[in-house]
Image 1 (cartoon, rainbow, N blue to C red):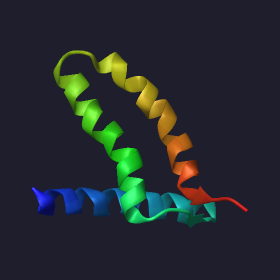
Image 2 (cartoon, one colour):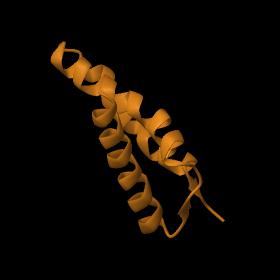
Image 3 (cartoon, rainbow, N blue to C red):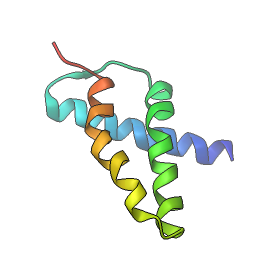
Image 4 (cartoon, rainbow, N blue to C red):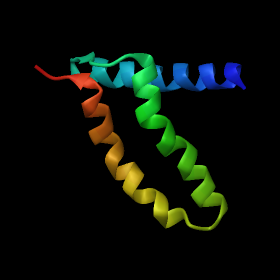
Length: 75
């Protein structure tokens, strides 16, 4: 379980780092903090889709850019 968790954290950190790079900024958090903030959205989405409540996922999709901005230093 810990190995899977570490891979998920690394995957999320790769996305945060790439987002910051494309935005011309640097990450403003640790990999662990980014994982804690974003993993819930990734965990929740498949659960809602599998249960037939796909529409419940949309607010998380809208919030993802805001969460990524929180994890990046602008300025």
